[in-house]
Length: 505
Image 1: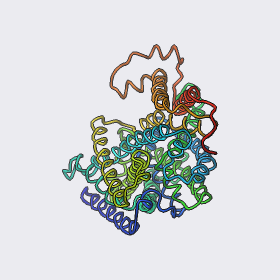
Image 2: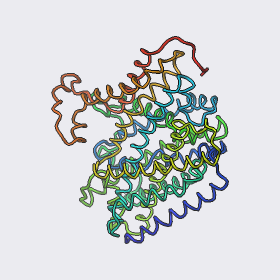
Image 3: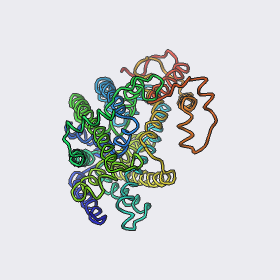
Image 4: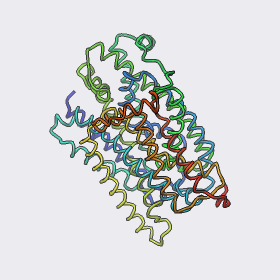
């Protein structure tokens, strides 16, 4: 199938999104942009969150990672299950009780304005880098497999994609995203299932036969029992649990959708339904990764992990509908992770940093400010994608999880300290603790795995012997976020006092 035909389907898909956005954003205001007027349907939120949680990174990097990591990623997914239970029955009741628009407002009520600013700043930092890394990955695939053949440069592709996202999120915000995410999740899952059936057919077998072949290759191994390995099952499960708590429960983008549901009970139903479906979908992505490698071996294909899925799906063996469905599924995975990020960053910056809800501005002036911030973040995304293009990083999910462990640690420590203790903090020292903690955590991680940093930096740090002496081969994995949060918690304990809690939690 020609690149022009595939590009035509991309444009048609975008026009469909614009139509949905126009319909759902009629009569919108700041409240509908920020929290959907608290009238979102919990079933739509749950289904749409699947697309947001998975993103283009999951769509490409999780299948690509099976070749070297088997089904070890599912250990993290099991950790997610534990984390989502904590979110549903600990964090959501707190957010609804305080009637929050921004979840970081809790930190101000609990500890003061500095804690509020710290929480919002670390969210903004983490979400900007994480979302733009995901955006770069998908745009780069579209560029390599479609747009280069049409003579369209990478910079133009990035600009147009972000312009598309601005168009359909500019007015409706969360109110619109709830519906567009649902549409995009349908597109992504349809593409996933169709591609699985197509690859199985290409292997001349059925589902059971493919599973047997995967078992014979060892791809279906879920639990890694090597204690020193970075993917040891306890590290992955604990890391996954705290990644879920931090990247969903303490993340304004994800919680903005949850608290847009009209009551706590429905929001909890949303979270647990989303969890059940997400586990099944992640398993399907791993299964897809395994059969992709089987098929690659069959046709003697050797490409980088992140290029495996698009190379096979868009190859001449799968011309026609499969290529179209792959592209639709890919951009369906792209848009939910980016539109929600820009919207939540706009909300966070307006409410937590600019505090426009506390000013005497008219509704028109607040809307003008919100629109300027929205465009500003789109420009920032554009620049960050160009930076990722210059870096040209591969298997980007590894980088995202590492960066999340560094930036979400202070959020984890702050919220844990607020919920688990009745102590107050020295407001002047909160920033100090929350800056030192990630630096210390990153230093510990560097000592544990200097080769990871050497690979990313493209230089030899000469720390291998020091690492062996201190850690004896132990590699820190996804438990980095827990280490970071624990350092933050201890630091906050040092600067705390026994003054009565400012609010009841």
